[in-house]
Image (cartoon, rainbow, N blue to C red; front, side, top):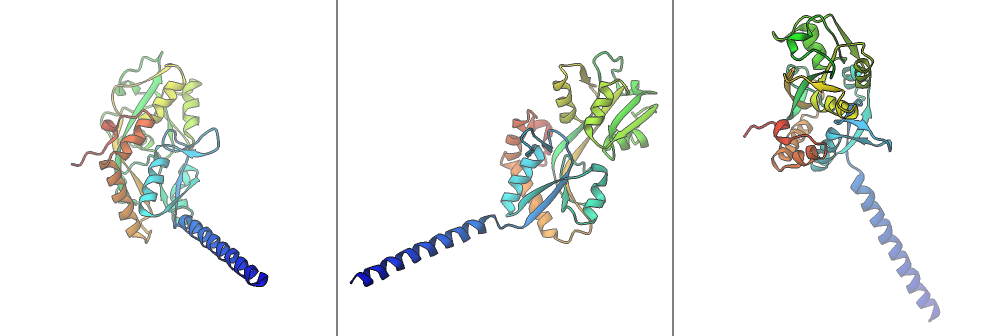
Length: 267
């Protein structure tokens, strides 16, 4: 009789262990998703590393939610911005996602988006006499390398842009800030939200010119050779749904950016 009871107990224990194993397998299966490797550099507030060493930012949160909706796991990889195309072509990353401008680059990549407007602006010292874009003539400008402001000033693709004395291009946006802070240049140019954060951190010692340098659309860039076109379409649809259901607006609010200024309104 004792043997019979013992056998029953052993059977129950084995069953419990099996159930536990199955639960562990199911639990593991929930995170066993295909990965989307996303490349960007530090560009606050879109993509940056916080004090706890965690990757955060507007585009990081957008990527996390969009990937959740399409059944992918986002993997964030910090890259050197001017190496982004070689990283993409080598397959080290699947896409470039970090406040990247679609406008003027429509044929250079396959795009998911657009999902937001991007305002490129100019910042000068509060003591500067520069009040308009035209007054940048013969002045020194600092920008981030391969960014839209660099192209605008070097190629002068806008009739409003005067001929400046020099354009200094830096790989890291922090170097651009330092250049203005140390007085090496007369002005800097870049994304409005990024430059506004720089102004806030410096107690109003700098200000944004009233004229926008450029207004463009932001998107997620995949190589033209990227084969999973269905993924790109799904991601684009997810971003559009996030715009419509207010998710993008909620994320922008967290970073003190007005959704009304940042939305692509196609309805």
